Length: 136
Image (cartoon, rainbow, N blue to C red; front, side, top):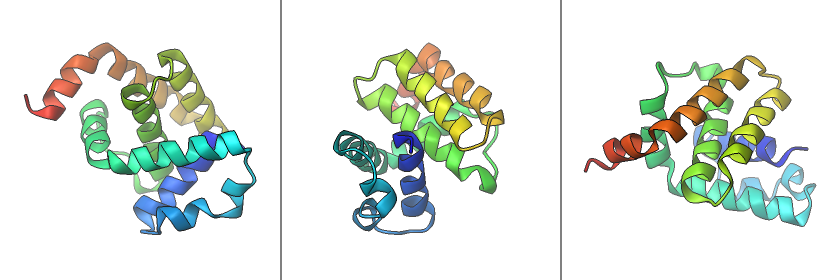
């Protein structure tokens, strides 16, 4: 299974079902990944939770309107993409393309255009968005 899809499902359970991140990371779906992918999922999930408030504030600036409750997986995927762009050394094109591909694997092809637009919009407006988010 795709590591971004797994990370999205982990974040869904932690953020919206209030499960423990440590417990969710012990799930068989995560353990079925390669050790490198498990480490990546752990890293991105811990980071996305750590910076949950900041990533949410950035996301609210970038989305024209909030996503529907049924699309919380797309919100989690966007958080992962933003986390990679802001806090990891992932090349911009890789973070955007992999996040878009993960939406397709979640069978939400319609969201691939939204994700592409939001993440590329962030890259274009990064300084202004971060300036507003930090309240400087």
